[in-house]
Length: 180
Image 1 (tube, one colour):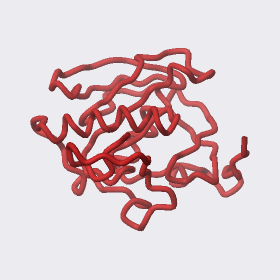
Image 2 (cartoon, helix red, strand yellow):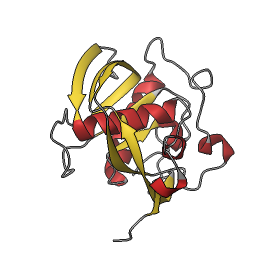
Image 3 (tube, helix red, strand yellow):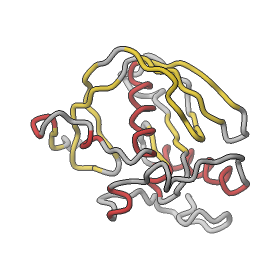
């Protein structure tokens, strides 16, 4: 069960992700609208736990707080079970993630929980050095590559108001999602 409204103690059995989201979530939040955390409150720590649960429920490789109507600069990614993942830090919940350095680039197919009917070919860096806070306020700086780097950059894009459709070169790079 996952809390639908972000309040501790109030539980709902459903996953509420912005699917075909209202306008505020289509454009996500600008950096000014998203709350950059200076210190991590009890509520923010609760949101980190909530995101961990939601990423598992959604069977997703990542999720950004604005996708679940939480205006914080917080993401969760976990690519351990993805066949394209060559590098993996396991399940990470990152607060105020920032890209320090990028290198290389390649085109890869991406999907998004906020745009469930499509996938798109998106150019992303191959290697990424990033810094962030863990939910316990420990500062980290690390490097990742390949699919995990792609997932990290995708989720950081959500925090900055960018969707995969903003990253495609043309309409020819957008595809209807194959149904399983």
